Image (cartoon, rainbow over all chains, first blue to last red):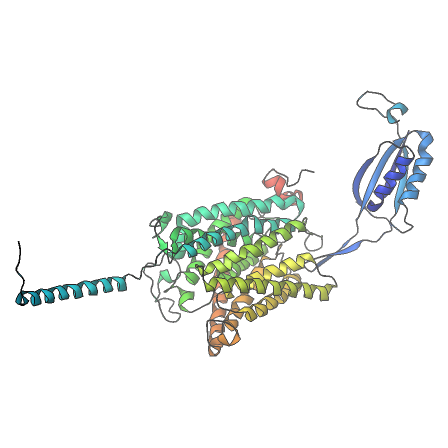
Length: 113
Length: 457
């Protein structure tokens, strides 16, 4: 099993979700996060106090799939989340030792299908 | 017994009857000449009941939301708690002795000039005539309204003033210290200044003709001065000014600002203590000045920083509201434009450039807006109250003299309030400490002082 983590621009979430749905990915978890890489922050001003806010709002998706689906899922995410500009984000893939469906107690690939 | 009448009898009786009639008429007329006692006017009373509610609304939740949104998420409840409990505490203290200290006029009569010693203690603070509101019953009147309404109306001013000060020491002062400070400050600063400005003949500021219709001095310069002293004595927030401390919820702040603007009609127009032309004009000039100040601050920010902000717009509005407060009884619409514009620009400077340059951490700009705005308003009242400049109170030739008196009022309040606030804060600091420990400040006041969280996920 592979965990695919993707940090993307928030406005791309809907598009990525559609893309994953269309290749049959059933579930995912989404978190609102802040971060930066090469993308510059922005200025905020409160009563004359100017701050450069380096952290930008992003969205993190986490999906766990069987090994054979890794490439297709990563490709779908990258295609849907891309704008061609700095700040598009990154995808990380890691190995998962086990997964368990809480309702039934099933584990292994059958729990994530 | 039948009396046979003939002309000889009638004339003397007529004379007697006429004489009795004359005596009776004279008595009735003299009785009505004595009978200048004001009578309850239901129109005035209805308005003042409403105005009282509006001014209370300014504190809960107007100011509470305005301030609440400006602080960090982890401290939002501390602000709401301070405003709410100050409301309750001041209510009781006003009831017990505050009204008496402020409005007991026993032994007072008009004295010319400063006459500091001649006017006695009652020129500066009232006595205990109304202790526990003794003598204030259902039928007592203050002018044409029930005294009960007047007591409550004035109470709402005594409530909002210490709540304003909380803006200066937000996010780092101990809750217990906030309460004790508020109680002592109310007793030794608010009540005497209120007495000196508003109690009537014999009161220092009243006799000097210092114009403060709705509390530019009593509320704003007073609170602003205490705020400045307090924020310096409590010290800067950890990380100020390097660490960004943006408002955690500007939607809350803007909501609160709207409530303050609307509620302020009760504050200014209500200070006419009547439903009359004075109240009407006060409402109009309040609206105009606030609008002018909003645009002035927004404009200044747009020019200086390139973008107009909603925080700037609402802060400008408050600056205008503060400045028109002392002027609302004596200036006209054009004066209101001038006062609002001036306050918008000057308070913008005070709350940004000046604050940063002088280095104090007036967290929510209580001094920058209320102290400075109050001063601007008090001084410009002296100018625009003149009939030549659209006002209703003084001749043009009296402007310079009035300015001198207005300045004296501002300076005297600043000095008195500053010194007494310092003493009170020092006392509290020595006995229980003003500031929360560093760890508490870092984690937040809500979870530490109140064991609550403003937002649970």
